[in-house]
Image (cartoon, rainbow, N blue to C red; front, side):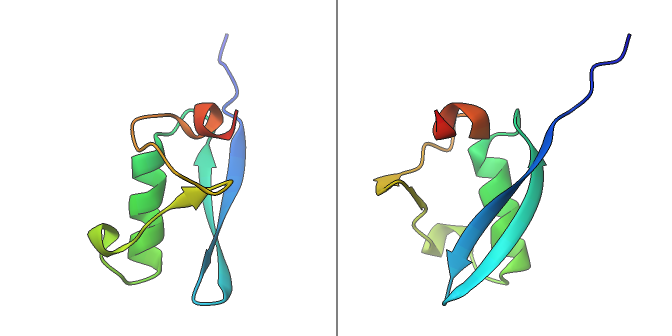
Length: 67
């Protein structure tokens, strides 16, 4: 039996624009942020990622970060 992956969109706001990155709830935050940096054509290390006013933890899954 195959398990369906639940895809979600993570929305980043950067330079006044919203940029959506499609991912799975089990993807690591760092991986999602790297995809964003590529799409935004900027260096990952030059960015600060916040969620609910706190710095994100790159080691967590997006599901754990959102909890």
